[in-house]
Length: 220
Image (cartoon, rainbow, N blue to C red; front, side, top):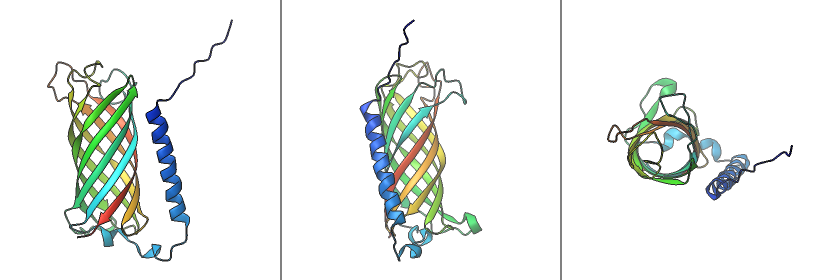
């Protein structure tokens, strides 16, 4: 009997995303490790104030799962790109270690699905983010977003029958201020796509979205 081996060829978008993430990670670690006498002076609470504007870009890997809801398959994978425009809407709210400030972000979204077949998604979300400000230049956060998208993933999958879809997403993350004007971030979101009953098929697609990004801040 002859043994046969099947080689999986990753799509170009996956190669590009992997190279981009690795370059960003290497650059970030070099910046962190290089000596900088002013680094100790940077604190998130001195940057995140009412009126501060954030311009950011995140990208990440999206993977569906079947452990929540009634989705028929976990064979849905994508690369997401998320530009961000944020505005801090409160000054620091005093709560001990939980002290922080709320931020509202407009988040356009674009995605390329490569499993179970090639497909696209475009749209945008409104995101509410709580920034924890008690940890120096490290800034944990939690965000929650909701949005509207168009995708040609549906109606070609059994879960959804309309190309108009709605997003719900939430999860924690961490930002590290490289300087008083810039920060890098890692985050993870529980991500849900459905059509809210607008079509005859509406089994929600649940996924985990891992994100890496960079932001620039402009105080009021």
